[in-house]
Length: 159
Image 1: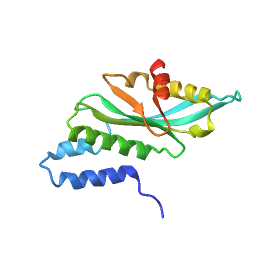
Image 2: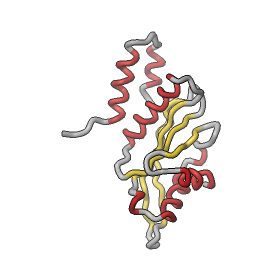
Image 3: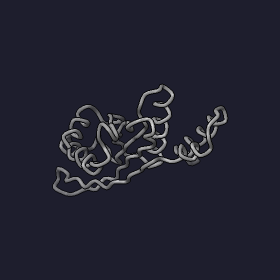
């Protein structure tokens, strides 16, 4: 039995929620789609001297209420669909509690448990450098998530 696509789940939830709201159909069309989804390949020199390329994502779902915000996870099972769904849910959560942010989410396909601190640092810096023009306090505010922490965010801030 295959697992259902998380983004499809988010769209089903949206469809169910809008039945209870008086909302313009054009606005619903906007809410069905992330504003920007980026797929990034991050080359990292590993401790053994070899280069390994990590697949990574950032979904900036909607910034109508303000800059997007959302965590960045490092996990071997990260998928594009998961990142898109989580960014949609963050958008809706921010709107429901009336804070001036939109939703975003990022992820890197890696197993941080098998990586050294130095490799994680190089990966963190490479990921954020690849997103350079799309990240910042007025655009998109990253945060820690699964297998990332304040140290990861510090490396990203140093870029």
